[in-house]
Image 1 (cartoon, helix red, strand yellow):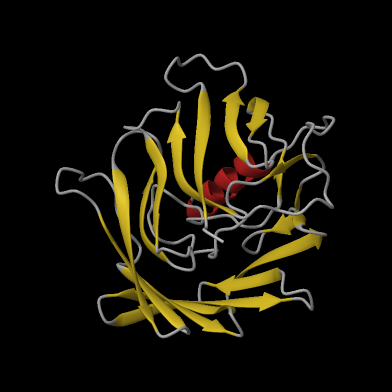
Image 2 (tube, rainbow, N blue to C red; image 1 turned 90 degrees about the vertical axis):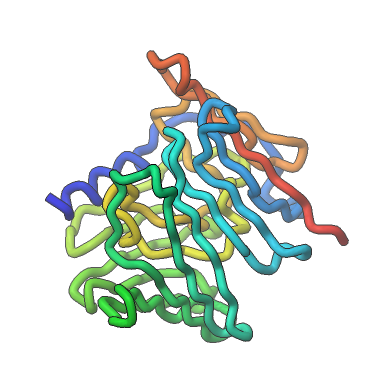
Length: 254
């Protein structure tokens, strides 16, 4: 059941429709680096999906609020040790009792300025280690976890993942249509554990695409003058409170 739930969530994220890409900046134009600071459901400040606090030069994430847009959020705190490891701990409000957690902290280890492994803890006991593998272009091509019993496999074309397989399931999830807009998570630095909370079985960030994949749940995409996605409008929404997802950015000072 747990495996099926993960697969369903990831499949829902990954399904694409064959559509002509939305107009946007040409691929060879310079990219203005903007950093996501807020992601809201229906552009409602009370329905936070992501809220990110950065340091002044946008080289470190200090705190993250992460939710489903339903109100309650998980708070993630980042503690940096030199430049080779980061400890992440999380908590929820005392009034929230329905979320359960696999672990209570993770430690991200870096090598050559990219994630080498993530150690997952319950208290002081290390329960699992995720290992990350890259190609010659420094693109993530494999992640192992469940003590090496499960794998995620990623296949890239240029700056975008066009196929992946998750867990030990051999079913490939393919991306066959993209907008020419920039994915909101593209400049985020981490691909974090899927194993944080029972209710949120997906990475905290998904920086696996430069270009936003076309998704059948959304009928329209809007972007700013630099090509960064600012709004994704739901297709055939019957809930007046769930019409769109909006994204807000900041730009690092030169």
